[in-house]
Image (tube, rainbow, N blue to C red; front, side, top):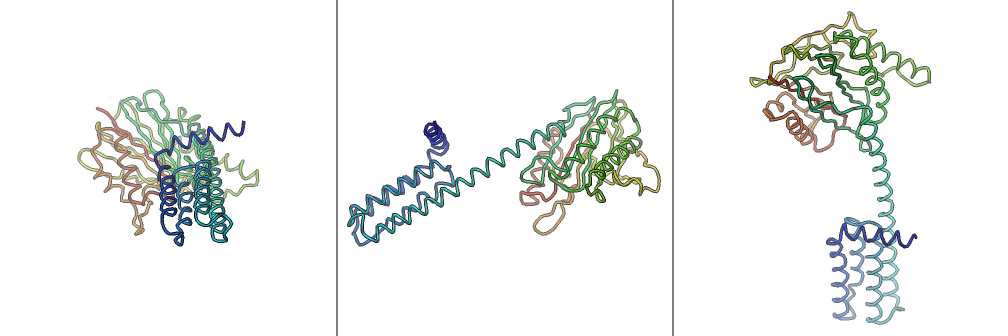
Length: 369
């Protein structure tokens, strides 16, 4: 059974890299033929080590073993034709080639195990993301929505940024937030807040009162963590709670220490002038006054962009922050919210050189006429 499994794996690797494998095989043939035909005093056999050395760049363990064995056979044939197998020079070449092949195969094996573990972790994180961060609907009343999530951790596709949407009568309630921290360590706080939002979003029409209810729920979550012996002194969530009614072209929001939304209209791109932002969730006791709801115009044909600070605090190699309003101006107009976010995501990753240092979430909401 093991032999059959190995042969099946070898066939799979061959099908995947059957064109590239011609390179090490061709090198084995070329080096062997030249070494046999030229003067016996010139030894090209040591160059055969190149064949197994380059194979892991496009193939797995089994194919690397096969190439290494073929290289050893070629080295043995060269030795037999150039003075015999038992000369010290040829024996040293064969042993050295075998050792290098063994090291390369061991590297392949470790790489494959690491890749398998990473694949498993990513599959788990994908499942967690589907449960926690349910995809937002493409349409909600007169609204079209799109989202993009970029996790900072290599092993995860979900982290500390969160978003959710709930339809309540003839209105859409939205939440976007950023848990302190990143990666899998922030998932628990995000899960608690998302569950609370989905449970109580229909109970409060006023975004400020909904934010207060989320504050109370999150404080209970922190108390449970404290009872279990976990450190909670710096646990908090910046968030924005929004209410977007179907019958009024307005944005009603309560800001809990979160970066203000960006409103993209045919005339201009501007940050909403939020003036009464409250403290982050989990730090409500620091508020000098009750949270308040602010209202802004949301004209048909405009786009509301919600984001987390993983976007605005992303830096390039010169430590320059990503200029979101300026870049958004240059990236519009886009035919759909999905196109807009795809352009923004590509531009953001280009700014930072392909890798973010913090989780980032984006939501684009377009109000149709």
